[in-house]
Image (cartoon, helix red, strand yellow):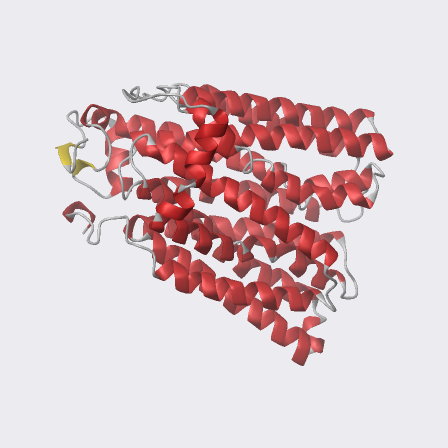
Length: 454
């Protein structure tokens, strides 16, 4: 490993790629922390290849949103409501739970980018299956087919999730990783805005299965294009690449939650900060109780999410390169503040809560917070572990969170609540505690940025 390996950001003044990277990274000389010295000269190209790939897949995520697009599709196809209830748990947990068992085989690959490419292609195939479902099936058959395709999509996403953080840690230095994810989220947020605008133009039109099939086909093509770009990353092989027995590797990894205090504290904080994602459906339910709910309101929610991501992701990314734990904490505070405001307005000023757009505005701030939580915890986890250990950390963390998500989902279904506002209150308090714990995490980025950042 090489710490603070300095090279000229561009030996050729005409090299626009190097100069653009130097501008984004705010550095005059190449600074390579926590990556191999031989990987330093490929940083600009690898940075932009990953930026392009992540932007494409994040845009695809906006087109295959389980909370909006897929839920609407099942409703259009006449599938039972029970299938709609399965969408979010499968979408989130399916990609996380198996990671503990697939991390061992993945570690046998000296170059992990091909794992990401494989996962991306499988996700595209799953989305093609969803598009076929939209065109060919209805009712229960459509529900079964779509859930099956979503399971494949989610499992394939798990492959890419493990590999992406490992490749990022090998090819992009510290204090540059957060801004990469932030830029990708900002650009992809524009696609969400576009989708919301399209829905707003279809106020008096029935959304047909053909319309959804077109959206899904476009998303599948985005994943295929992303895989072709990601495959060109210059990733140097790990000399220590090895495989492990699936069960023995899983058991050994689980012990990290007991023996590795920083990882354990991170997982606990991350679990509490799930509030930023879990609160969203309750904001929608509260809005649906108001009078005059139309397709325009759904478009408003989608626009709010896209605007929040576009406006905040890059800022969060730059901040995460300074201190990822503080970004996590800030996201938790904003989640808690927004949720407490929603609860108080709903309880004390019901007339104000009766304005449907109030919840769309609150959803905007919730998504700003969620963007910060996501970028902060991704950057923190990549920076926390180095080398081959990173794959194990990602697998343990994601598998633990996947299990917690399932438990929360089952508990939420079994425990009745007098109002969605009380769910928001509970999650807001969890977010406040998560912010406190995040602030107490160890600082894994440099306490003081290098001089090129000044």
